[in-house]
Image 1 (cartoon, rainbow, N blue to C red):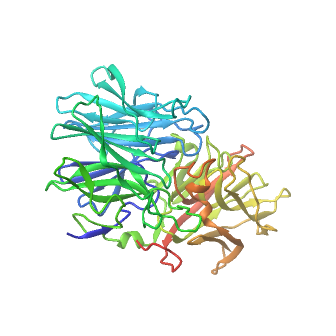
Image 2: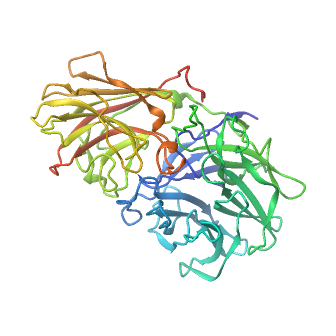
Image 3: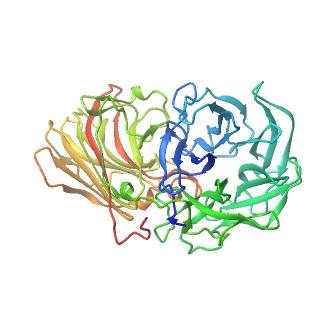
Length: 540
């Protein structure tokens, strides 16, 4: 069989839930504060994946204005009961501190591409919900249970209760069916049934370098559940030199010819500080059922870099330059997302073949900031845009940004001095949790004419980031500012804990007008150009 090199979906695509319908495979991943919510990829060979929909795409389904960074949509679970598709998810409203506010919802659709129903509220007792369709037609809802008292720990186990699709409510008794193992931080539950056994797959160890997939089973859905002989069927926690680190939070799928695979999240650190700029990505492992009726990962539990699958990946598109133009007929390209708001018309429009950003709140706002961006999916790349923007003072700025969160970004802006003179200014927030401290790393802004378009560019080569600019009549780009540490735009630098943030690096365009006058910036295009570079550890 042909082999694929992991990850199968590069860049920020965490918490994969996998489903097969006939010869079609679907993977749903978390999107956190990025809108629309949930990414669903499609494949027919497990090697080549394409985004086909983001189902939570209207205000009645999802409004994340006010959600902090790395909150929002956590760990969607995608299933099918023979009649319709079901998607369950958490919309996390707070994650830091002793409490987490975690309402869980269900939506459904007769088609994978929608339209999807309005959300059905289920509970808020924890996060990472999953819906299991039993052979007798009953539906069971599981989620991790949180305990703010930490008695004995905050991740208090996996909670089970029946869910009635007629009343659209939880019914009957509820029980904690699995406390987790000594590794702790049990989450991400998925239930399966095979040969009379109920199998419970969970994630443990937190989503950092101790992450793991843990498998348990029981003859009764209510338990007790015995733990797999290996305890953790997938993990790189004891192998710091493995190519795929942070492996965990998985889901299981069978092929029509009886093969079994485990999809899971992982990260690829690129510096001595073990920073994963591309975030948590999606990989696949071949698995098999042993004579003891337990599932094992082939060559596991350490994840393999190369795995036999049904097809061979065509990387032509992956390495191709993407030149995104804008027209109102086609709308925004599927590679792009924005932050939090279900009302995109308040932050951007496409007019006269330009992306027009409407200046709203400052970069890093948890409510309305005009930022449109795509994932960084390569360790080295170039990006470029042309902007037409006429600011009158320092509270109006627009430009090109490498962005993770309010605590991690680099931003080359067209702005103006307080006297109205237009200038180029670099702003950054470099691993600045909790203050969100803004820095201005240039010694002197670059004055530019008050009229005319400006070409802005950046290049990333591994951990090095450099900005460039050119005025409308210049063909050659000129460097601006020093070389910055791009590895700061990573999970490891985003929060109060080593892995306190959960998304990944983006590159895009932004506009702010904190005068409140809604000054607009027009962008002609955005180029994203992948680059092979000898400083990269990985070459996918």
